[in-house]
Length: 298
Image 1 (cartoon, rainbow, N blue to C red):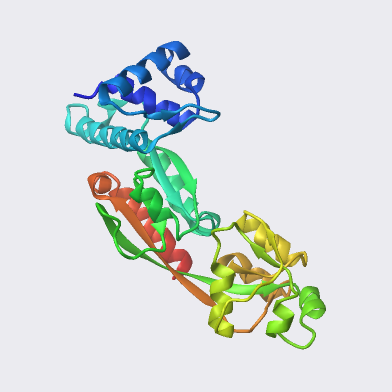
Image 2 (cartoon, helix red, strand yellow; image 1 turned 90 degrees about the vertical axis):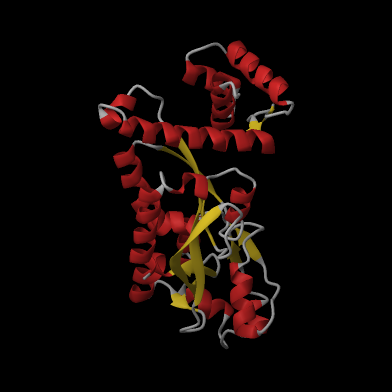
């Protein structure tokens, strides 16, 4: 049987990134936390925490952390069935849910679901921000219980709900267009015009180029890992980029941004995937995420 106080110590070390942080949360010394972690590692025959700065859960440790989250969910469900209802669990430690979303969803609609859910249900949220093509891997690896993903096929052990499609416009400032595209948006001009890239995993701009030109193109790029900064950098003439429609609608209407190719929008379908073992308890979150996404994306 799992030593749950020790397992909670593992989860808190992974969550806070240090033995000191876990000790503060538990109200014990760091050496006591270290002893608990070492004992459960010896009992399970696996290294659960990768010591470092910050400390990280190993794949086996991540699986234990998700198990502890599910235990927390089940405890809350049990408290509601006992005399006194949910109030019977008021003394219990708050449950932290590990979720993954893509940056553009976080910048546009996800908080409209997460904020009221966390307030009404009393959960804490540990959010991992990944490219929508990568969030499914966080589910496969057991790092999160649920995720917004571009993958329609269910990750093993997960349920899938369509959220709608995020619409993107390829935009730049009027001055940028005059400077780099005086003769129109041609392949030669694209090769000279600086673009914006979120990270090395970001393939959205290349997806758009392949859709419009039939193949990928090489172009100079800035790396800028922020959805809001993408929009601001485009407005300031720093580069061109694919930006979510809700974030650039006012700029396009005011003429601060212009589409590189009018009407050449790109849509990326998004899906909500949730671990089946947590699906029942997370049903309110799933409803909130679905409603907020569809209200934003249509």
